[in-house]
Length: 100
Image 1 (tube, rainbow, N blue to C red):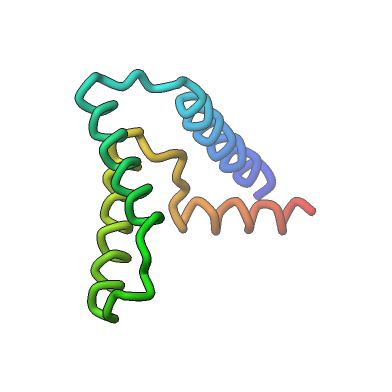
Image 2: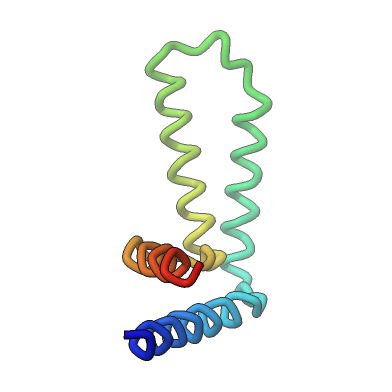
């Protein structure tokens, strides 16, 4: 049983180390992507500078929705980050519990 646990733990560690090393490399953005990021930043600054007290509830909802969409677009352009699945997190927690 211990051999199986150590093999499983080694596989998890190796898979995490590869994904982390791939995330360390800075991604080179094309001119289109850079322009898109800059336009998103300008729009966010416009929204921050707005006087939101004069807006109706629906308009504020639309602004929040627009900000969320722009955040998703920016993450998609820049590459997001390192993601762990729920299954991987559960396996890591179980391994830590068994070992400690």
